[in-house]
Length: 158
Image 1 (cartoon, helix red, strand yellow):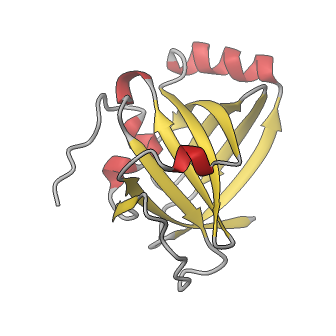
Image 2 (cartoon, rainbow, N blue to C red):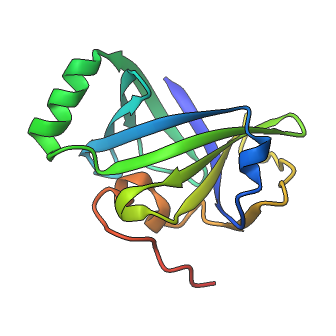
């Protein structure tokens, strides 16, 4: 079992696009959005994965991920959830030795841009690039599992 240790931030501007070393189109849906056992089905470009995550404990949670055949992923999404509820482009930016993942959402979440940084331990303090805004790590409104069931962009109350 792997541990996912990450922080999540809103993004202030799109300057990260010029800094990106890669981008990937991602579509995903949730077979379970139970916080104790979230089950995500994701297609990244032409590959598909089934991921099981435990409840967040601060910025840490259990995670298991398995490849699945692309045709099975599409069939499961259509039959079990009515299709993919999240559509986004993920940009990868290396900043001072840290790999940032920045998600630009499309469709019903158009306009939402969220950056995530995975860390080796919860007490790490990675340097923040200039495009990073307010931290939303503990705000469930920005969890993809919650976004999958809610339209629009969460209000950004400070």
